Image (cartoon, rainbow, N blue to C red; front, side, top):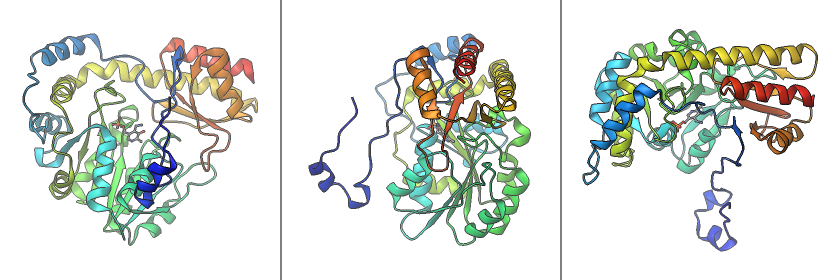
Length: 362
Ligand code: PMP
């Protein structure tokens, strides 16, 4: 049951938080869960075997290494940088909060490009950072010149690539131009970067531009959403600022051990990532046919989800859930997303079930 905040509780809360509600992912028990952009499969069996051994060998009586240094080294080796360029967090969410805490705050501006991941605005509110929205165009493209203009005196700019929920990429050329044009930290949130491929990543820019910061997570392509582990690659100065504000023991020993195995065995995921990309293109092609028949709109995506616009989206969402036991994400009430739904790419069977249900209802 949802947590209810009474008037009395609100009276005691900081006035700036009086309108907040606890985060609710709106999970409902269903057969097919396509709402949270998770990996439809658990970690590959070969990884699972090593992971189990690592967890079994991890003592629980000692506090974790606050900075996860062994894991930082493994990530640095993987990503071709130094330990000083890496910081690990309890999911990307924690790192987003720490970024705004360290480099935002009262009197500082965050440039956001909605429709975007809802956590950015939330973390800005929690840290007292002012949000400056540069809305995407009617077709969800970034308004690049407006972003450059809005970022001139900002403290932080967040671009999401691929963007959640729209699936499009921010080009490396644009990110570089933006980073040159402002002193702000430019965070490129690449939570879904593995589904877009290395060529689309802004990681190479971190070495060239000290104000470029890249966020990654093990939650999506690496099937570790339940363990909570994300990381940032940035200049040593940015990493030091983030280290100063973080909760010391937020990444527990079990998560550090699991993430270590996953990072060291990242090659074992190639097949599963390729399968999700293949399924994304297959589902896109099917939805495209419905789009060509005038039944919905669908956008190309470089992530593990597809964004669609369909008349009566809220009703379609309910019917998928109640009649077909399929949970997707309903964006139809979100600003700028009228009649939009987001479909996470699932297993081939799940995608077949989703497509058949959508086709039959339109
Ligand atoms: N960034 C984006 C764009 C996301 O969609 C998510 C997860 N929904 C995250 C960051 C954070 O993921 P996590 O906290 O699981 O690492």
